[in-house]
Image (cartoon, rainbow, N blue to C red; front, side, top):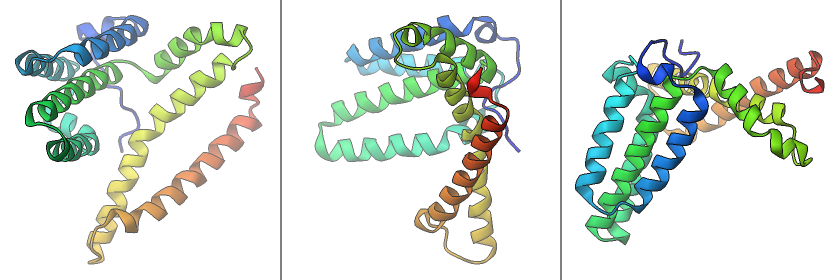
Length: 201
């Protein structure tokens, strides 16, 4: 079972500290927004795909992890073709795909603990202003990153169970059980956090 989005490795991206990677992700996302040339965006997409694969994740596994988001981008591209010009739809799809693969590369090359520590440090000024507790934000992000692959795995299990029973696989049928099981897990995690007084430290 997939328990983490992180991929063990020693690539260049693995060796870069998490804060520069997050800053680079933000800057690249902003730059891609202002680029209007399909050729440049296409080159950016190729580079981000290669960067993602450089983390050591296989091509098939990499696509499998991103399949739900890729389907969403494909759907948005189809809708944009109806509402916008073909060029605008292409530019939007290329931007989203490039950002997706870049974000996936950052996630695959960074451990959850490193993400939590970086976000907690970045949120310290907000804590000093009394707006939030930095450690709570880091913990929330860590939990999200930890359980995203588990929810995806649970969805695949429900899909296989429906197929084995001869029931047509539809998202509307699986959404209820998926949400209920996820909420139950969230309750158990919250109880464990409170029992250990993690948020009290």
